Length: 252
Image 1 (cartoon, rainbow, N blue to C red):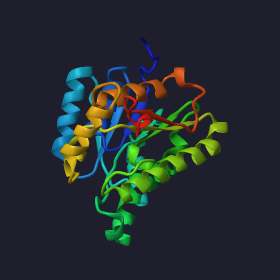
Image 2 (image 1 turned 90 degrees about the horizontal axis):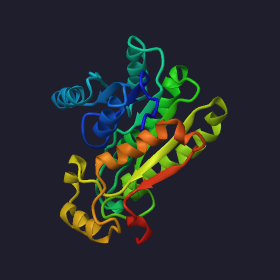
Image 3 (image 1 turned 135 degrees about the vertical axis):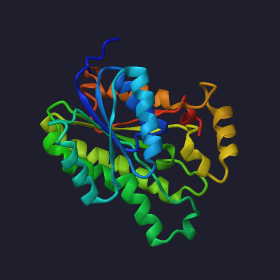
Image 4 (image 1 turned 120 degrees about the horizontal axis):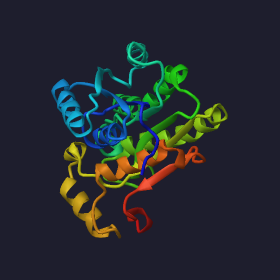
């Protein structure tokens, strides 16, 4: 199906691996010029760009920035303006956080987690707003910890819940301008980020056995929903969080 995305542009934060890379690849294969943001690992970002170019013929441009820092976000958008005068798809995917029981969390743990997972969306929308044309899509990537308890996920879960709330509030503010802001909440996805979970194997096994669809969610599953939300097919979807988990949460 032709989603009519050819020639558009996308900025994807945390786009060098996992879900971010899958979304970048899916958009590039639709003819979208992709700008990839990364924080530390330039080698991984370059490898992602190579992979995307090989699969789509589109070479992503790379931008290093900590999107949890408002000044760095503004600098990122300023640099981006040298390459484009608009951003059709703004994907706030970069994520981090401290995995500890709630009673062990410090203020700094919470600040770091919320800066990357929640504040970044607001910073990006504020900085990029002059580049967002009517009909632009803003997507935030959430997780099931926003509504369900996961061991050692108190900080990240709270930040994702706040992210989904922010999506709703920004949507009401910006929908009259023709901007669409939504979130995608993924199920358990076996990415590099999951390697940091103390109970990773148990989490994967439990999710696989309890998912009605019979398998884990993949980055490509999330990317497919991102494509839908970026297309004209999603014209009347505003301020929503779409769950992509194979039905896991309806049994939780």
